[in-house]
Length: 351
Ligand SMILES: [Zn+2]
Image (cartoon, rainbow, N blue to C red; front, side, top):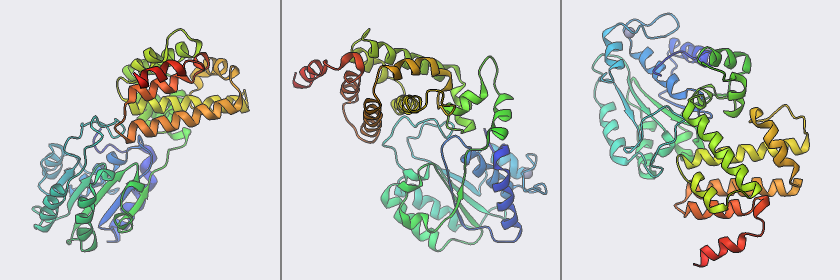
């Protein structure tokens, strides 16, 4: 998806275009908001529109001029994209395969040199940093100088779903553009026009916390199938059909962060159902029958403990280089059918 206009961006787009028309476009924009809202798509649309030789009245690129052809081919001399070097290229919400990859100081130095040259086409020089939260501390410090004294006609676009990870000194020097999930009125028709088969757009949007591009990605058969597989495995460990080690072997595979987000999302729904069995606000409305069964087996206190444990597990597995298989085993050993099996996991830890 390149710089395609997305219907829920229109207000933000208009506001920026008005600023641009009045000559008040800031030198640095920080595009924030949950993943799956198309922040990167918006940034590329803006960059192409500014570089285009004959944009329309709304500031959209023409797609036909020389600048647009170069932009679309990824070779416009006045535009550069900076990503972590080992970044797995994909849509913005797909998790990078290497969590440790960062944007390095050398990459920032290179682009400072790039911004220092005169624009080849006489217009803007634009740099897109994505995801900006992966700036190494030294790289962020190096970026500060450019943010403080931006070269004329330069534009920095920083895209991140986690702005809190950026140093406050960087954040405070950017104009923040906040993206919010669109209303279902806007998102459901957009998603429905892109889905085939029996998938229900409203249910997918719920699962994706209202983020349309994330919902579209969930609609990809592989991820949906994977969710079903994890659900099956969790159900089996809850009723004692498989042991925590087998469950952990299934869960540790693939995108662990996403697997654990499912787990947290199910546990949030379990608490909602415990509080109000007919709750209409579920993250996973399609799983209501099975979640109700699970919920009935556990006390409210127990459900809160399990949610806490799931959140803790996510933090440990995603943010640190720990023995994830073992952590998963410990988590699953706390599910209803395995309350006594801690002995069994303890044995493994000692062994
Ligand atoms: Zn053009």
